[in-house]
Length: 151
Image (cartoon, rainbow, N blue to C red; front, side):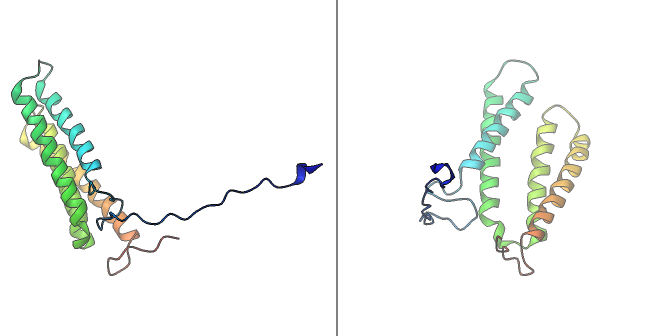
């Protein structure tokens, strides 16, 4: 008989924003937004040392190359993520494009390819990243560069 009665609803409590915000979107807490750059840097460093091995055993030089590559990419990503709001749309998209093009070109150059072929690969990657980044920035900001309110 009571099958038509609505089940009790749960009360939703609104969460208060965390107190550890660092000023950039998606980076909160004591880590200050280092999680994503470190993870991507570690993956990049492992891949760089793997490409540099050319199928042989791992040497200390290749391990150091991987660690340094990981650290450089992680610091560059973190810095760009923290400082990107200070740049207008076009230079910000160009910065992301340059970072992506340099990272891909460096990895390709580790495979004993010529510098010219690394540049030929890196330029279209950078151009694609520039187009996507500019589109995202253009559609998610007003004319003054402030983020649009979410619907």
